Amino acid sequence: MSPAIVADVLTMILCTAVLIQSVRMMRSLRTVKDGALTQVVDALEKATGQARIVLSDMKKTLATDCAQHARVVEQARMLCDELSVMTGIADSACERIVTAVGLANGQRNATAFDDEAPAEDPVAAQAAA
Image (cartoon, rainbow, N blue to C red; front, side, top):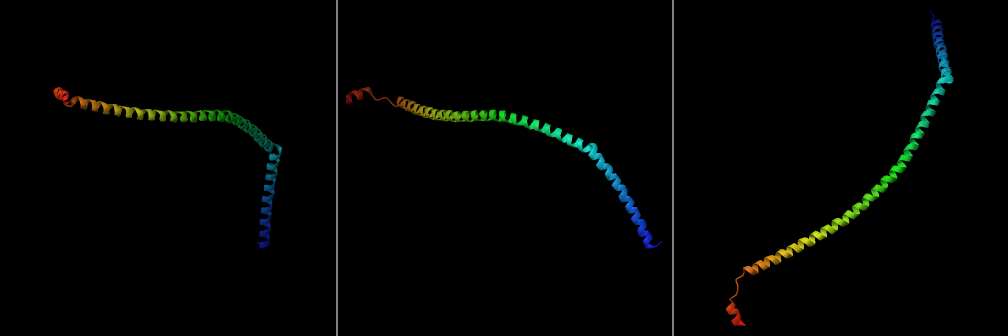
């Protein structure tokens, strides 16, 4: 066989393959055009509608819940401030109590020390007067 005949045979095989592939592609395009594309678009439209509904519900929920949580957080901050003030008052009262107890113990110890001291001789005390 001559190279020209081999080239012609190969060209015919390639042309046949191109024709077969073209027919398959035309069928696929016709199928997409007839129904598959509209079904895909309808499904996307439905999904988009559902997503919008969910997003609007989420916005409503966040608007109400976030406002409520903000109020709760503000109340908690106010309570924290009040508790800080009350803790400060309790600390100062505790310090005053500890100081008063210390003074009372000191006076009691001084009184006990005076009671334990030897008594003066009453006769000597009258003589000195």
